[in-house]
Length: 385
Image (cartoon, rainbow, N blue to C red; front, side, top):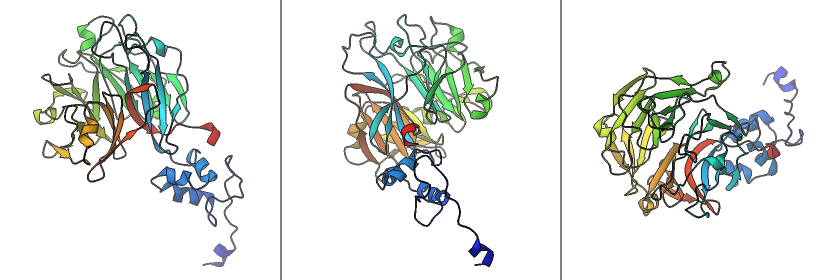
């Protein structure tokens, strides 16, 4: 060691609001080095259990955000004949294993005016459509009491600032449409406006949510090339972002399906290959927009798409796992896990990295049932910072 290095003063500890500046995160190391070391721990709950200072570090701006589960939920205790059970958003913190409510969104549109149940539709619930993109949660489509589009401006939640904002007005507000995200942009396609319109049923719009674009004065919806037909306006559809393309299948269940692929780079449409379409036996999601997974709504089996061989391969799961996944209605994929909503009101997590895949339930707050789930960075909690 050189004399200059030996005589150099010790690195100053970073002054923080969550602890005494003389209290080291790891004894003998500068805090900025300690933060790098602790950020390599894959399970934040382990850090939380060590000491208060490490627990506060998890929620500080200096520490990388860990993934958390966000859910759109409705009141399950109300009479099923009610027009409109309450709608709410909550976040499940994997460190504390607790559900926290999100701050109230802007009053326009009022959440209580977005319909989930209606006396005219006894056999099914009306869709409320959310997507996640660029680290944000977006409420984008639903129906009001007149069975018209309830949302003219998307509601955008930013977990880092723990705040909502209203996005620019949608060119053609709609319901029962295809919604999805790809490369930090959200897309809304087909669907029905206040009444059926072939123009709306074939149209698609895009809103880029990347930071660079949000700071642009031209932050607005962009109309894209029309779809080739009207067959995607029959029900709400999850458009899956996959390798810079959006994958859409027009109906759910056992009905004869038609698939379409939108190329976000070329702004063009193509038919979905039959070998890909055949795997759409339930909800589908793409891990990091690179690997497709499907959950069979009838059998509960999990499949992974092999793009090179153009075939779906079944993923082995622990004994009894398929039974837990039967009735899957929605799925999201992130960090090696699938989060699945089932028709009986459960949230099931599938660790597809493990062999066989491990499966467990996430406990849901009493009196609520999930509509959809999304994985985003942990929500900012000022009391910890």
